[in-house]
Image 1 (tube, helix red, strand yellow):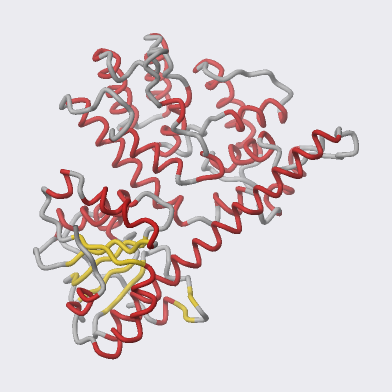
Image 2 (tube, helix red, strand yellow):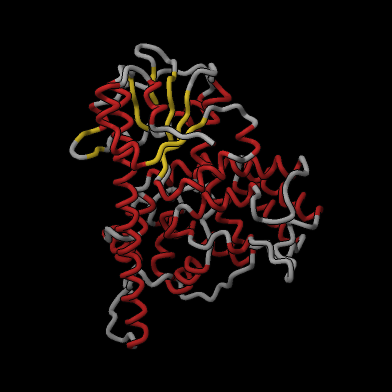
Length: 414
C-alpha cells in the first residue's frame, strides 16, 4: 500500500470517486443537511407527542433515513438497521416506550449540542441502555447533524478503515465506532489541506476502499475471483455515475423550462441559490435570473431554506413570491414539499401557488405524498406537473401565456 498522501491524491483525482461525485460536486448533498435536520426534529416531536408509530414504515424516521439514502453511493442500505424486525425484536425503539423515549431524548440532546463532547456523552449514555439493535448505524444521522464532529458509518466504510489502517474493528459497537472516529479525526487533521473539515471526505475514502471501487497499490496478486469482483464493482460505479448525470441533466432541463416560462410571463425568476452557475443547452441560469435574492420577511434560517427551492417566481421589483417549484427526480418528494411548506408557513399570503415537477413514472409517488394528512390539512395549494408536459408545452406557454395562471393548463391536483 502506498503512503496515505498518495492514496488521498488518487482518491481526489479519480473523477468517478465519491469525492468528486458525492462530496464536492453534489448540490443535493448540501440540501440534505437542512432537510435531515428538520426531519430529526420531527422524529423528536413525534416521540414527545406519542405519535411515533410502532413500525419503521411510514414513520418520520423512515423519512429521515430516506433522505440520507438519497445520497446513494456512500449511504446505500443506510435504513436497513432501522427496519422493524418483529421476530428479533430489533431495533427495540418501536414497541418499547422507554427505549423510544430514550432514543428521542438522545436525538434531541445531540441536535442541540454545542460541543462534540456533549454528543459523545449522549452516545455513552445510549450505549449503556443496551437497546437491542440500536448501534452505530445512528452515526450516519449524527453526520448530517454535525459533519465536522462525526463521520458516517456502515459496512463498506468499516471495511475500508480496517484495510487502510490494518485494523480489525467490528460493526455494531459504539465503543469501536468511537475509536474509529478518533483515528479518522487524527488522520484528517494531518491531511486536512488535502481533505476537508467535513468528515464525509475521509469517510468517502474509506468507502471507496471498502467497497473495492478504488484499488490501492499493485493488483498483480489478485486472484481471478477478486479481479472479477473488482471489475464488476467498477462497472457498477460507472453505471451509477452515468445514471446520476442523466438525472442531473433532466433536473437542469426542468429548471431551465421553469425559468424561461417565468421570465417570459414577466416575473423575476431565480433558481436555487446553489444552482445559479448551472446551465442547460448552452443557456446559463445566471443570465435569466435576478442578480440578488430579495430579502424576505422571515428569519435567516428560514430564508436560507427558501433559497434552496429549485425555482421561484417573484413579482417584479418586490419580495412577493408568485409561484414556487420543486423538481424531484429519484429523490424524496417529501423533502421538496418540506421546503415549500417552510415558505407557506413563514411568509405565505395565501395567493402563492406551489408545484412539484416529477418524472411521469413517479405520479403515484407524488399522489401518495400529497395525500399525507399533514399536507392535506395544511391548506397548501400544491399541484404537480409531469416532466413530459412541461417539456412539450414550454414554448406554447411562453408564447400564449399572460400570467402564472397558464400553468393550470398543465398542472394536476389530487
